[in-house]
Amino acid sequence: MKILVVMEHSRGAWHRMSWETLAAAQALSADVEALVAGHETGELAQELARKRLSRVHAMESPLLAEYTADAFTATVAGAVERIRPDLVLFPHTYQSRDFAPKVATRLGRVLVSDVIRLRDDNGLVMTRQLFQGKLNADYRAAGPGPHFASLQAGVGRADAVEAGSAEIVTVRLDHGEPSRAVPHPPFRESSRAIDLTAAELIVSVGRGIKEKDNIGIVEDLARALGAELAASRPICDNGWLPMERQVGSSGQTVAPRVYLAAGISGAIQHLVGMKGSKTVIAINKDPDAPIFEIADYGIIGDLFEVVPALSAEVRKIKG
Amino acid sequence: MKILAAIKQVPARDTQLRVDTDARWIEEPDASEINEPDAYALEEALRLKEAHGGEVIALCAGPEAASQTIREALAKGADRAIHVEEDALHRFDVLGVARILAAAAAAEKPDLILTGLQSDDLGSGQTGVVMAELLGYAHATIIMQVEAQGSGIRVKRELEDGWFQHVDLPLPAVLTIQSGINRLRYATLMGIKKAKSKEVRKLTAAELGVPPAASVVLDRVYAPLRVKRTVMIEGPAAEQAARLAAILRDEVRVL
Ligand SMILES: Cc1cc2nc3c(=O)[nH]c(=O)nc-3n(C[C@H](O)[C@H](O)[C@H](O)COP(=O)(O)OP(=O)(O)OC[C@H]3O[C@@H](n4cnc5c(N)ncnc54)[C@H](O)[C@@H]3O)c2cc1C
Ligand SMILES: Nc1ncnc2c1ncn2[C@@H]1O[C@H](COP(=O)(O)O)[C@@H](O)[C@H]1O
Image (cartoon, rainbow over all chains, first blue to last red; front, side, top):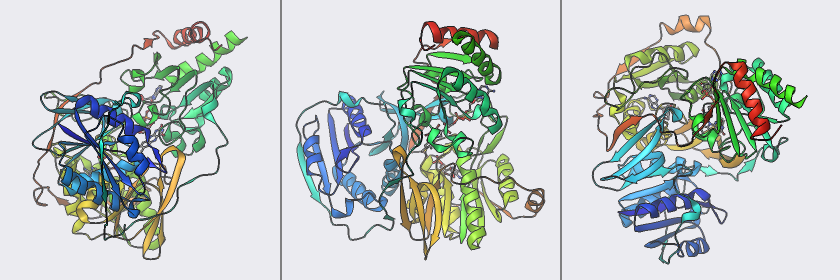
């Protein structure tokens, strides 16, 4: 099986998930090629050439200096037609979300997005989550390739990429058409007043809290423990807590000694922001909540009963 | 501005999901609701209309039961709706669903199509992008702000790690809207009353010329296997709390 991995980089640095995707491809096949698209990608291509790959494709154009969906779609779709892989893999990043479906559609194919497991079982089987992680589904690639998939963080391990040596094929592109979208330089909102990344203990609240006025009970537990208060995205979307307390793929990435999640289901976008925590404690009334898959300690119960009781017990111990 | 808002009905968040007998999908859920980001997409469409005039059309593919979600969109202020009635939408792959929606949208020639960023049930996160490609529209994803600008629009995209970016786009365009872009409104009593007389055009996928085909086959739906052994703390709440506090003191050692 010939696999083409579309690598992602910005400002000269690789996106870590590109390596994870490359490792997953190497685990599946002896015939892996990698593609890097951009402007002045020489050094990036050189680095790829030192991995176990059949070939490195460097797609060069000034029009690829800044990411745009139009230019990247034309480039990658063109490359896929020329290279003819059986499988095209993207890391499931925000950038891939923006253009990988467009590439597949242009070639009349379907992208299987956000894949969490990839295996060969009499053909390619791709596992992805349904219903925010409550169920899994196995998808089978049917018929001739190219098949398209984007891989969630953690399918492969970045440090497992095998070394080797590969030839570099540089293609200088000249797309006649400029992008319809005009991107402006990326920026950050005003600097974060709260740095959760340094917190030793975090108590995090999710939509199980139901109303803004109830947040006090979780805040009180945080106070009792001497922990920082954090939240899942919907809490911040509703304006119940400021955005800077949000943990997850679009919030902060934290790794405290203890992360206590109360009323948080454990959607993948939340998990990627806290799964590096040393000890994870989950309080949730739903025994099937995905948060329990990564929790060290779990309480199936009503947070409105458990959390105040826990605050009292903690205070008793602390005296 | 003529704006189309793609809204999907999904199982309500707190309902119990049951895998169906042939493990290909789930049984009819006990309760359903609008897909969360789609509620924000609809709200953004209504706000743009209020600021710039025009029309908001809700577009939904789904079973007859999805009428409930369509009615709610009309009650909130959508002017009319298109309902592509399909009982078993899961027989179509993402491309198939996008083809259905794109075909229904093409006939309307909207200036702007707003979809949610991702559906809570399938979670493909790509229907809007695929629609844009099928229709030949420009697009931008994970949008946190939309402003009219000259003959086009300026949007704010969410990037990773707390970064954002403004992007200028010509119209027509497709935007995939991220939750939290605005504050949602509630339907008023007046709105609910008015919704009853608003037009809901019914179509089928067959009428739109889209056959149910899947080039990627859904093999099996199942509950995830637990990889990690979680220590479950049982008992009534007071006991659970006392045991957890003891664990925090003796095992995790943070007290
Ligand atoms: C591109 C993208 C980026 C995203 N970025 C983020 C991000 O950075 N951070 C983030 O968190 N999310 C993010 N999300 C959203 C994510 O997909 C989920 O929607 C979100 O994490 C769900 O939040 P939640 O667990 O609080 O709510 P829900 O999923 O609604 O879960 C609520 C939980 O509370 C439980 N519960 C209810 N009542 C009680 C009770 N009385 N006692 C105990 N438990 C109770 C329920 O069983 C349920 O498990 C992102 C999504 C996308 C598509
Ligand atoms: N059956 C449908 N009817 C209306 N809109 C849909 C449908 N399926 C997907 N969408 C839209 O496409 C978005 C992304 O869905 P998905 O690609 O499944 O994650 C959703 O948030 C909806 O706005």
